[in-house]
Amino acid sequence: MGRIRIGSDDHKRRFCRAFVDTFHAYEPHQVRWPDLDPPARERLRSLPFWGEAIGSERTAAARVRAMAEVETDPVLREAIALQACEEERHAKLLEHMLAFYGIRTPDEPAVWPRDPEWGFMRMGYGECFDSFFAFGLFRLADETGFFPPELVRVFDGVMQEEARHILFFTNWAAYRTGQLPLVRKPWFVAKRALGVALQAFGRVETAMQLRGGGGGEPDNFTMQVPDELAGGVHVTLRALARTCMVENERRLAPYDPELLRPRMVPALVGLALRVAPGRG
Image (cartoon, rainbow, N blue to C red; front, side, top):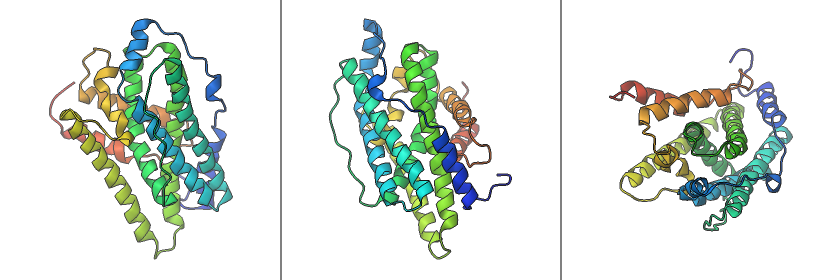
């Protein structure tokens, strides 16, 4: 971490400023969607996760907005409110795209969290899991030509915003832990551990449901589509995991190197790659 001290005011200013200064302003209704030929349009329609994707973004937006409304620190509140805007924009971007291509999805409203901090924590750890795999799946879809280049350009920006989100959340969680009085730290650390465990369990549960032919939960939609995005090209789990590792590093590389990076998911995947049998 070099010169920065975790939990200090300097740490807070650095990770909040890194987030705010890299904000990219645009409006979803201004995005010009490309006309797709029938095969490309059908490939887009065939993806099973659009409803889960919108539901996940709406839920994330509600959780982040709730946290922004109760945050009393003006520096943190500015950054968290900006993230809420981005999460809301992701949902609207998907809505505009699906409407343009005539893809119907269930219209399920987001649920407002009763405990803003706990909702924000669950959302943050969920994004750490989902973004890691989404980065690799997006690269795979680009390389196989599953998505037309015009769509890749639009959603590349969304992927980069997700990288900023997990960078911000990782530093927020560490900062909050460092700021709490000693008597309150064990409970907060326990909540962090529970948040991680619930997200990890949810992904394992989804993987088991998928193997059995069942559906996944909205928060876990990125785990549902490796075969579809591969575009008919055989991709081993080891190759996909390596792609996720490389893309995760690349997406986070542009930001302040002294800020904390989310390491848990890459570490778990790296361990799995070392101990799992097989090649590819």
